[in-house]
Image 1 (tube, one colour):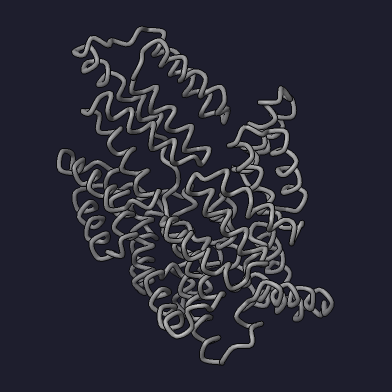
Image 2 (cartoon, rainbow, N blue to C red; image 1 turned 180 degrees about the horizontal axis):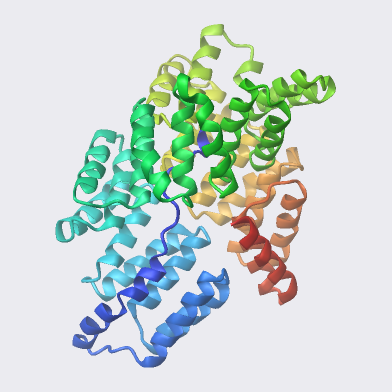
Length: 487
């Protein structure tokens, strides 16, 4: 599940921050003879309220109306930025953030928005330069610090990222998101004890932060004498919605298997399976757990799925290659990404066409917010297995991340021709069709994804938007209620 590890912090509400700085915006705009009328402020506030309620379409309309009244009104532009980001359209989010920056270069919030999007769109060097300029003016800017650290991680400069975050802590910045990122850096450096040391007191002070609980649980799970203590933090992280992609559930299930809590382990593995049906580790653990319960037929079904997915344990490869693949997967699961790359490199140097290694590398690159490189590697993997549904899905996922909705459609459809029950592909295809303004087709795939168990807040949000665009208001509202429950 290496490619599914979260690499960015929980979404920050730029919109709320934009409203906070309205007073700061108005003064510079006055100097430019662009004083916003009262109506623009009211429209932005209404848009913000709609955004917070999960109604992205109404929020977008209010922000657009504000901009019609007052062109280049920075809070309106930042509101649109937040809407595009919530929909996963990072390219449009970057374009809107740039408009905000051009409208008023003195608004640091707009500069940080540009920097964040550059980092998330695999332009870490450029993003880091933008964010560094902000930090020169405002060294304690929390968001610029956070995304600078992420950029440094993506540029394989973990020591610099750690130094930046530690310096921020020494200056008094104590935001949980900074601690979360620092915890992941220590995990990647193979220092889980230090990750526990910094995360544990902050978790106690911020019990509602699922991401912090997740870092603490993952770190405890890496320390042999403390592994059992990881169970409760991971349970709480899952209960609060951390890692909807299933990583926390798999880590917790592995611990429960060690404690012989088989039924609970199977429950978490089934949930992880619905979220990530192409994850080989899920089927491997599920097969073991089911055999221990005596359910031989279900265990054999899981083992067949593992073989179909091409898990390292099911491949006819030299033993040393399988061991190296398992090690790389384990390192990735522990968020030790640099070490996972180091383990994969000699494998790919010796066997550059090894599909399972290329697939893992592509997932790692995607998790590191380097989608352009991930696409190159995913396409190379597909050359070795052109009829693999999971690799076609991976290509579609990466293209969608890059904002290539049209190009993502073809591989996703091909994946579903091979495996019609691949729920994640239905979900991603629904999103791709929505972005192409084809809601009638999109809702069919959203519904099928839910039927197959590939549910998520993002799916429900896209489903609601598609229904609303078709005038099916009551159904859209039902999906928004489901979104709020899942979120």
